[in-house]
Image 1 (cartoon, rainbow, N blue to C red):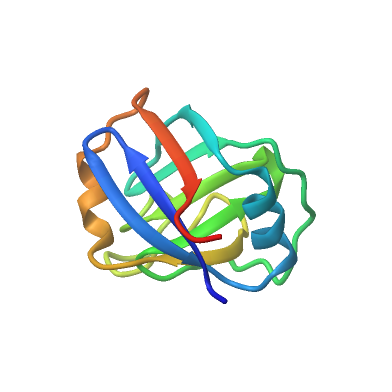
Image 2: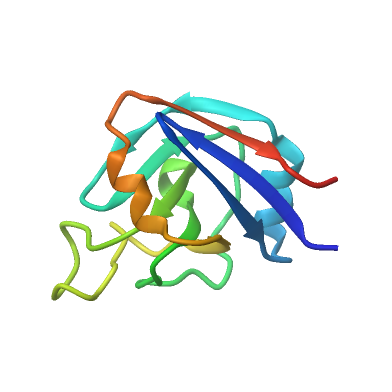
Length: 126
């Protein structure tokens, strides 16, 4: 069964589906998580209590991808270019991330979230 999570970030609420990777399972097992959002271009990231090595890490990601950034032990939501992107359509993390899932619907709604706002990740399905 697909693992669906609910993301509440500032005034934004969204659901996302986690993939079947080891990293996604580790994040699932750590839920619920609440942290303060940091922003970096069109990316939200925050530290989480999960420690995983690179696992098929990707240097670029797609709109709406959820990632785990091993060097910072951080959960990432990608919804557009970052300062590292090479061109207006590329989404490039600071360094490779483990892609762990995808936001349902329009990920650009996360543009409304400001640095310092609370973000909560919780299980939407069991």
